[in-house]
Length: 214
Image (cartoon, rainbow, N blue to C red; front, side):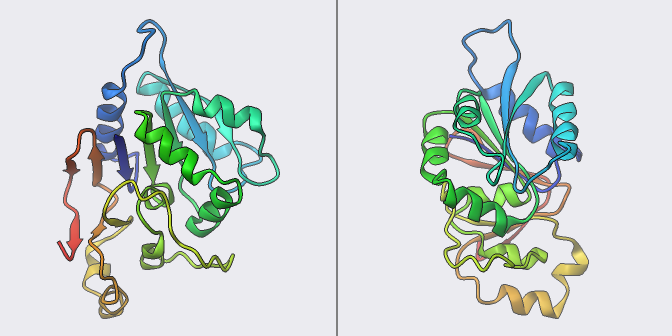
């Protein structure tokens, strides 16, 4: 599988992770740019966040041209176009709302098979947590389960959990350590300037992550 889990794609290690993953993808037509699809964690009516990500991929030599929304704007046609892309970008945002939308559209098994078949999967912040077995760790970075989602199971493409936007002050906080204590599964605490890559069977760490129960 080809996976990238990013806290912040604008950092040096975020850009490096994107670059390495894109370069690892095999494209039949080598004269056309890699195509990347985008799944919005929540509606983006003006495409504000989509356009920012689109510009980022353009700089990297890839084309972000497919936008998929999980709520009112969802269409089968957009999904079909998305699955024909070389890679799929799972956006940041409200992790609980994102997972609820994916479950409602029954897209978890679809995306899982896409990754198993060799498609690149890029998760940023909330999107990175979606790649793991469960989004339960979203509470550690301040996400609140406003949609009252009961089943927090996610794509389960890696054997660890992930929490983005971790900083030294948070790690030293007694309250954070108390929140962390109940987690019994290996958990990557990822600062903004770090990323994880899985191109073969081995997870490569770019930058300094902290690991709970490593």
